[in-house]
Length: 468
Image (tube, rainbow, N blue to C red; front, top):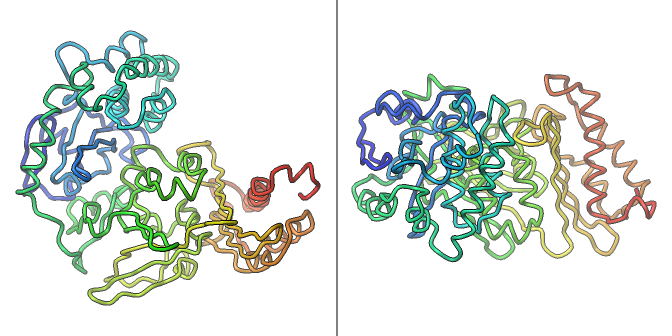
């Protein structure tokens, strides 16, 4: 029996654990404010809030309910648009009304939920963050300017919060209903009666965030026998031992973006993360899922390839380690047995004279699948490269590590000549194909530009100095 709190009501369900929350909310609970749109996590019409206890504190984030199964809701607080209603209009709803920020109204519930999440975030409120909160919500009537004005009004209200607890401020200022103040205690009690995750079973389908599996295998997943890994604490967390960063397989893109470790060692992480999916999807999508999806353009796969990440795979009591660069054997083929679970990912942190950069180009600047993406790690001693790792997606049948190009860079000084020779080596290594995202010729040209961009960032004023 699955148990969680839906809005202000504790629910128990005997429905299949693979049932999507969107369908449960609309068809079994008859809460139809949550809309059905793309069913692929792109439009945000079905956005909900998910509250869970993390390190003793109640924290909320948004997800698209069209990709979230009931099994991942167990022991949590699920909030649909109806669960945000107060007497009259709440602050977010009122701002939308005041600015005329709704036209046909289909997208409005998702926007309201996303901005409510902004209001109860622990981050210091800022207008830019209010806008980012709705980056996964689409308005088909193109009413974005009025929505931006509404977001500005909401942010203005949030400046009054000062040092007050976000949930307390929100419940006392007509942003969320008063019942939110009781959820921490109620979830604590519910967790005591909710089953903890069991050890993964070999024959079951392994599910992390489900952001790809439910798009590709929706019908099968609903009734699949599933091991839900997202809430398995043994697979969560980002830790550092010596100079090695260890990540559990269920670490999400949002976890990675918020990690003090990545903040310290990857100064441009806020920029990188904005190139990858939407807020709602990043809150669900796991790094291990991105790797095991085996897409030739997986953003985090390319990111970690340049870092020479290692994968720890488990089958029962047997553990083995596989370098990520050796993991892919062909298109969608991996060095992974059916009964193996990708348990951990680890890599050496770029310290001292190490420089890292990630680049991505797609048809839209944000929230889109890459045409070509690439990452480069250089370790320097003065103006000499002592070690290099270059990767790219969209240029081969697998996420590609440039072994020849990386070896070539070792012990070289950055110069225009070295770059030109490097680009020639790269062109000989890749085998792009023409597809809906671009021709093979275009991808070759694009990769050259992105690799050049890596070096322009590593060597300030490189063009003016004649180095590139």
